[in-house]
Amino acid sequence: MEVQGDTVLLPPNIARDQHVTRRGEERSKGSVVFERSAEITPLAISVLASVGVRRISVIAPFRLAVITTGQELVLDYAQLGGEIASRPTPVESGYRGDF
Image (cartoon, rainbow, N blue to C red; front, side, top):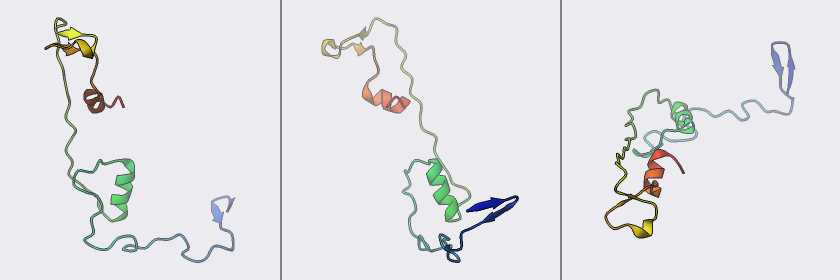
């Protein structure tokens, strides 16, 4: 590839329509692109756009809040006897995005 001003010149060994995908070549009409619970990532948005989807309905992830006073906290999981561990559990960390 060569750029000359506002023009891009392609090498002569590239065939016409090489690396061009036409509508319907990747998926057939009615096929599932993403499952209902799929996370919408930048890649997912690109795929949806490639099949003509311009709008989707989404559900925002829920938020988690833990309010503690301090008396119920212990530092070691092994010492738990009705108290709460003072550091986040793996589940809480996952919801907060710590992983």
